[in-house]
Amino acid sequence: MLNASMSYKDRNKGNNFAEDFFEKYCKDYYIVRLGFDEKNNSIPLFYNINPVLRNMPDYFVYANKKTFICNVKGTANIKQKEVEILPGIVSAYSSKECPLIYAFCFKGSSTPVFKGYQEVIDLYMDKTNKQWNDGKVYRTLSL
Image (cartoon, rainbow, N blue to C red; front, top):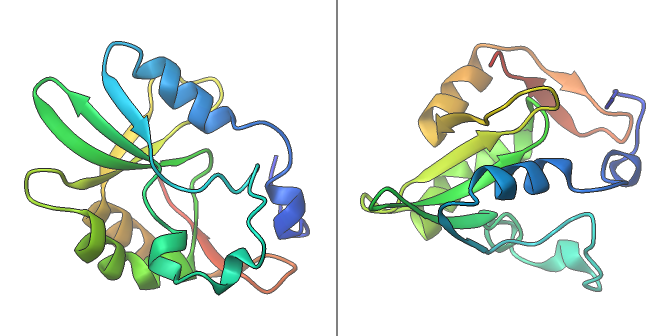
């Protein structure tokens, strides 16, 4: 379980439960991994990369004759910095025909909770700031 006293490194230790859950859920669809994997990232000076590129969506999904790009989350916590750059992410990667969606994948659930990017922003705005011990501000969405 994640808590505010954990460092970034501690928060990203372990397996990729959310991604594994999402891939199993999408077993009958066509998916392609797009973004960086922070749990296995070995890129030197990763944080020098432009934030919009660093935050590239996780997957391309083709399902039921529709296309999406998808960010997969294993928690309802969304960082302030992600919400701040979300318009740039949408501009760079999303389109009317292939919109950005979020898939929140939780242990004990049988399906992801899907939200459009604007829904994520709206849910974020309804909550108050919290802070990790490394100073990163986040909010916990009601999903």
